[in-house]
Amino acid sequence: MPARYASSPCLAGEVAPDYFDPLAVDPEQARDVARWRRAERTRLRNERQALSVEARRRVGEALAGHLRRLLAERFDCAKPPVLSAFWPIKGEPDLRPLMAELCASGVTVALPIVEVKAAPLVFRRWTPETRMVRGDWNIPVPPGEAQALTPGITFA
Image (cartoon, rainbow, N blue to C red; front, side):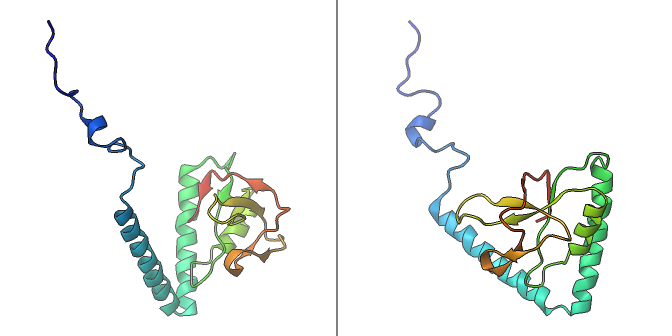
């Protein structure tokens, strides 16, 4: 007669049904992470805004140079994927010159848009000629009639 155990060798089901669920999150930990993210956003925004306009310009140019090299090294320029970038706000690096350069070279550029709160972002096509409208938080975004796209590369 085979041995019988009081419980299965793996107690996962007895410990808690979601014990091994990789998506399960402790509510307290989730609050801690959210609090940390808010504090980090504020800290980084303050550091960026403390830079002079010239220093911010240099940071944007340096970042654009790095991204340009990275794109050339890692992606097939003969068939570039859709690239999502961001409109600069609150002292963020200004990548608009790089975005225009990429458009001129045949890359399709998209910008993220909050069309529905608490839903996935929508990415709409952008070119230097796009007539921008005010989106969530007054961030300039392509209009709703601009083509919706799925980016293969995202600058975030």
